[in-house]
Length: 418
Image 1: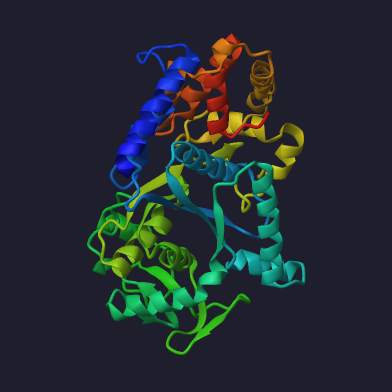
Image 2: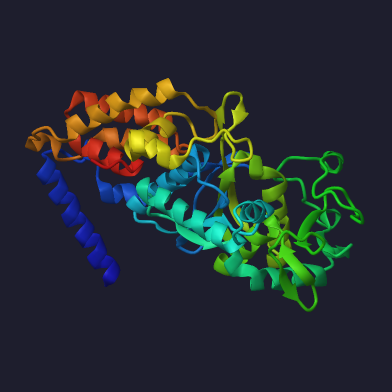
């Protein structure tokens, strides 16, 4: 009975929209029908293909690797945050339920180092810059992601390190615990590295490791001011890769749909997280899509707090506002590196004004309904989130000043506010 009522309601709404817009079925962009055909293909680093972003259980689960909080966040972070905000906006606008989690690293030697410099505590430093990050996120207009601090998941870290040990995929060495990468047949698949290449890319260098590629899970040998105790593991901290796995296991039980972050995280960070989740869940593909965003470069180097060449999000917001930052970042495809250019950024002042002017003009009734421009726009988003092509279409639509309903939809997906 409910299914019949729903079908009837859909027919009535469809007929109303056709009547309201004064168009026939062949030209009307029917939003309800669009929901049925929702497709988002996004590049999967693991498969090397544009794979369908499809939730396993009706709710799409997405985990994003966020910054380490020992300083202010910069434009490179903004690019990642705004990209996944757009992905979530698009899917949610089409009726999909989303759980988006931004993982924040608040246990790290850099945090402790800054605390010593300022004669403060690691907790004070991390809490301060988490609050600053949250302020930046609000100012950018991002409301699709929840925050997870790795320090809140220490007990989970202890449990899953012990579980990895019990499954003979980890071992003790000089007070540390490592993931035995040689015990995981598929290790290297995400980064497309052979066993020999993995050996040559030494990580977590320390004495006693079985293989140079083995990953540090529990650091019991270094003391930089942040320590936790477990009767079986000893005193130490869950290392970076283990911290993120703990968040994934706690929130999603290790099985979810999209894991995102910067391209530089593919190896060893995401490779090791995948190996841990495979071990803990006994599922070969616990994450359906591993997706990565290109870095922001400046003066020939990646923008990085460690290089001291950052442009802080808040400084850009003061001069440009969130609309212009979004327009600038979305003008390049997300997988391409973005070379920062002040002159290119400045160009989007006029773009922002063009869109605002089109939206605030006097609108007559012929502009109240969407056209096939919306279909064209969504086709770009659905094809690996091609924001550069979608943005060109939105600018062209704004300049024509005829199809305001289409323009409003595009503006909403891009997260612009007028």
